[in-house]
Image 1 (cartoon, helix red, strand yellow):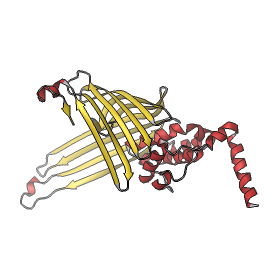
Image 2 (image 1 turned 45 degrees about the vertical axis):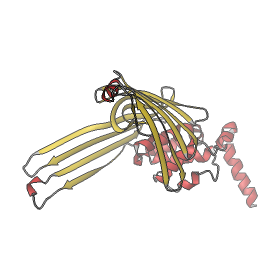
Image 3 (image 1 turned 90 degrees about the vertical axis):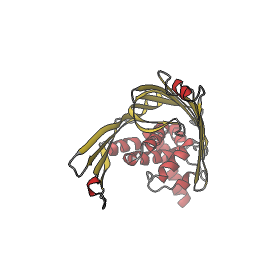
Image 4 (image 1 turned 120 degrees about the vertical axis):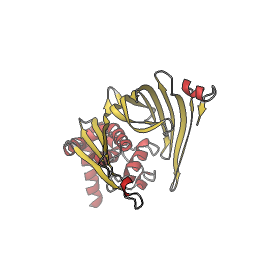
Length: 310
C-alpha cells in the first residue's frame, strides 16, 4: 500500500509538470555543476534555512526540481545577502528559471518579494582620553541598503553610506555618498547583466576588489555547461574610464580559476592582466593565489622602465 501511494504521488508530480517539462525538471544536476558550490556558499551564509553546506558536497546528486526550490529560498532571503551573494542568487535564478516558472514557484516568490526591502545599520562611536579629554571625537556612521525585484529576471540594489564626526570644540564634519545603485540579473540577451553604480571585483581581488562606486555596465555569458563565465564591462571611477574583463572557470565544487584584465582609457595607471585560483578542498582552510602584471605607462616610469609584478 505504501509503495502504491508513493508511486501515485510521483506519478501525479510528473503529470503536474507536464510532458517533457516534467522530465527535464526531474533530471539530475551533475555533481560537478557550479550550482552546488553556489548553494553551499549561500547555505553557509544562512540564506537557505533548513540546508547545510554539507548537502552540496557531492554526496548526493540533486535534481533540477530540487535546485529550483533552493533557488526560490535564496530569492526570498536575498535582502540579507551581500553583493557577491546576490550575484550567486541571480545565477541560480537564471539557471533554473524554466523549473521555477513551470512549477509555479516563481510566481509565489515574486509575490512575497514584490515589496521593497530596506535594511542597514547605525554605529555610534565615542572616544575619551584621560590625559587629553579635549582631543576626543564622537562619530556616527549610517549604512542603508535597499533591494527590490523589478521583474522575474532583474533586481535593483542600492546602498547609501554616511558618516558624521563631532569634536569637543563644537566642530563637525559630515559626508554621505550613494555607493551602489545597480540592476542585476538576466538582460540584454546575456546570462548576467549588472548596470549602474556597482562594486568592482575582478578575479581573486588583486586587480580590483572594491565596494565602488564604479559606474557603468558589465555583462556576461556562460559557455560550456555553465562552468565557464565570460564577463566584460566598461566602468568609470575616480575620473577614469576602465575596460575590464573576467573569465571564471569552475571545474569542480572546490576549485575556481580566473583570468582578469583591466585597462584605463589613457593607459596611464592600469594595463593589467592577472590569473589565479581559489581552492576549498581542505577542511577549515581556503587557499587563494593570484599573479598579475601591470604594463601601464606610469607604472613603467616609476619602476625603471619595467612592468610591475605582484
